[in-house]
Each structure stands twice: as structure tokens, then as C-alpha cells.
Length: 272
Image (tube, rainbow, N blue to C red; front, side, top):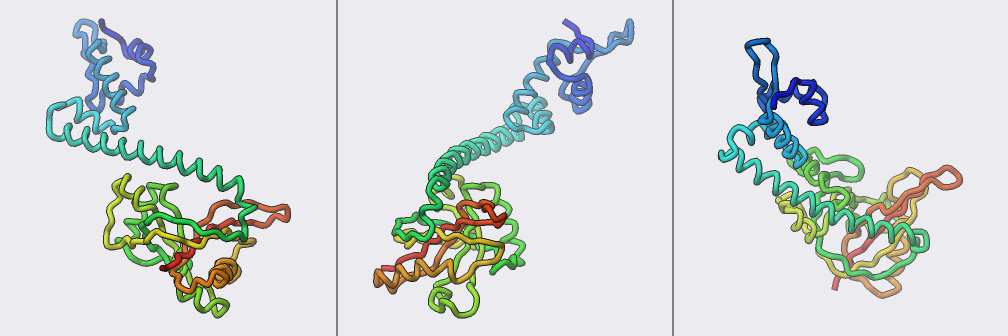
């Protein structure tokens, strides 16, 4: 069976210019009838086009498809298939973790207001963290910047978390609140996503944390009010051994007065 370009396009459900482009890069190859000068496509072209379309649906580029259809048993084809299979497996894991994260966000949103100012003790898992700034000033480290971009591909499983040093808690009310923004992920999730633990990545030990939700109204940075409740609770519980605090945004809204309200989670590590 032979097809004109318009017949072929109608059969495959694409535009003629798509067929011309696939011809240009060598995926399909129409033949020319020397008796009338017309160019025709054959069933061979429909098969190659549909195979390429299936590969495109699996995430391959047109250049990848050209390689796979030129030498399917070659080393380059094998490497392309292996790489894409690994990438899709990672995407499937990320999708599963993201669905879990969204269910957690649904729970948090439902009770965020009632938990403002409340203190509870919670066991948090081991985590990995990549510091990317001091205060609001980005670190000028090309290697860390490259790693930051790689980590950002795993949002929302990777979270934006600021570390508040122990020394800041110790001088409560004096000077300004020092903090270091960064990216953070549980060690278990990092392992599931095969994120490498490079020298740039710091380990944040899990364990018992004094936790709270604090509400920030307006557009300023951290202030001492955000640390008041957990510090008061630690003193009340006679807990003198504690470490850094880690804060991340949970929710945000614009109130009736038109002001932005951010709800932050803060966990302060309790040391034994």
C-alpha cells in the first residue's frame, strides 16, 4: 500500500509538516515514482513512524529515536534504553513520594490554625541538608549551586528548610535571628531517589524534637517571636540540652486585611 503525504497524515493522525520533518531527520523515507514524479509513503514508513511515536511517548528525543531506529542492537541504543528506564523508575518513585506528601499537606492544612503556638514532642527521621545561603544572601559556591539545581528537581520531596543555630537560641532577644536557608530531604527518601551524599551535603540526625507552628504576618525575616514558644516549653520541661532548630513553611494565605500570613513549622532538636 502506498500513500500520498496527505493520505499518510490522515492515517496516522498528524499534520503533513510532521511527516516532512520526520523525513528530514531520516525516520521515514518516502520513495519517488519515476513514471509520474510523485512521492509516496509505504506501510514500512507507517511502522517506523508509529514505533518512533511510541518511543517519544516513553520520553525519548527525536535524536534518540533516530539512533534507536538506525541501530537497535548497538551499544548506544542499549545505553539510551537503560538510561531512560532508570529515569522513568526514578520518576515513578518521585510521583509516589509526592502523592504521599500531598496527603500530608492535606492533613496539615486542615489543622494549621489550631496548632499555631502549640508545642509537641515528635520523633523526626534522619535527613540530609544542603546549605545554600546565610541569612538571605546566597553562597557563592559554583559546586553547591550546581548541586542545588539538581536537588530542586525533586521538589516537593526536597523542602526549603532554614537552620537556626543553637547559639541563636542561647542569646534570645539579643541582636538579630541568624539562620541559614537550605534544601532538606529525609535520608530515606534521598536513598530511594538515589541522590548522592556528596561532601556538600550535611547529615541532620533524627530523634526527638520540640515542635511548633508559628505564624508570621507581613514580609519581614525571622524575628525573636518565632522562637519564644519552643524556648519557653524547653525551660518548662527543664530541658537544657538542645541543638539547632529547623524551620520550613507549611502554608500561606492573605488575611482579611490584605496582609500575607505564613505558617511555619519549627523543630528544635532535643539532645540526650
